[in-house]
Length: 465
Ligand SMILES: [Zn+2]
Image 1: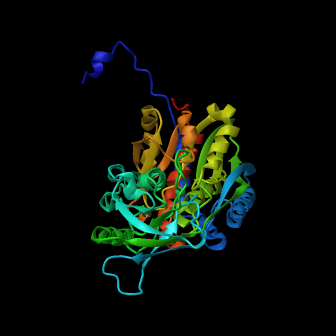
Image 2 (image 1 turned 30 degrees about the vertical axis):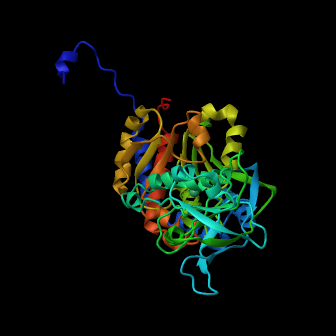
Image 3 (image 1 turned 180 degrees about the horizontal axis):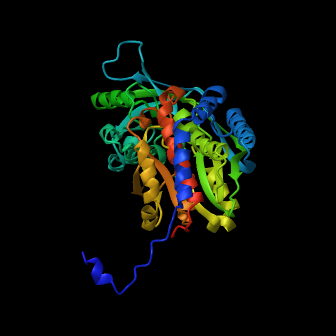
């Protein structure tokens, strides 16, 4: 290291102040208020218990949009509902049983627990009955001759890495396995399969199927697609090498015409740069099996808490804080795509975007997708966040599904780093319910989001892009 003296000729340019002493004091107040507030918990409780599952296109999703709009008006935000046309997929009957298998007792079947994947087409009402083939991955499928697959029900038995999740890398474990849910059905259909099942993408041990969207490719026939529980995947994979296994499968979901819905947008106008926007967001739609408490009632609730506390503490953000409750994250992302389109001309005025969509577990810091300089600028904020154990600033490539179009347009993006060890046990299952949320941990998430949002809104400097 050169000594100070060696620099005596060049007067060092003073580091510009990013956060004023007043802003830092306000951030501490906001943090304490968030840690001591039960507003977010009451909001997620209302979404999960009073409104319930909020699958895009459902009456509950519409009710949730209405509910948020009235709540945010009541706390003094400027509310807009921005129209979005959304898909309307409705779950039907979903049953399966093994009707022939090695060692079978006479006149018996083996029940298989499963659910349809979002966007799946239906089987005929009476179902289909076909032999089952099981593979562990795409490579195994590709190595199979077409006649081994054609006319069969294909099972992808790719396990979710529970060890990786236990190490706190639940998102990575999910990312590795979810490609089978997205692309498995079309891969199987290309080789002539008549239906496709995947092993549920999640880590639970309670024989729960995990739903989620599948993506049919344009070059493959659409075949019915479901997720069996991890236990049922193991059972089938155990029987298949022993001899022929036949399954009867009934899935009767419907795809109805697209329907009008909305992103709920609530602004607290900036006092100095009202045209500059800091987005705080979560997605309002949820899957239909549970009540959408952790995915993503929690993310919506902590975003609402941010608006609530800024109003309650009479703080004056310099830039506009914009709460967005996105619609249709789960099965199409129509809401975020529409927003990016409608606001294309003002993208440069989007100062930053934040999304919370990883549950409600204890946060240890902030993910940042931005110029690495932003991480340095945020050091004083990290010092404050450390008060509740959330002082880590982590540069990442991606912060959230709904803010992705903004990320891609270069808008600095943020999300809380949430405990992901248990999230994928419940994610997209019937067990995504309010009891999975620890009120104290939810409040910790609110504190991180509120502090980060207000810091961004009141930064004395622009963020380098
Ligand atoms: Zn989500």
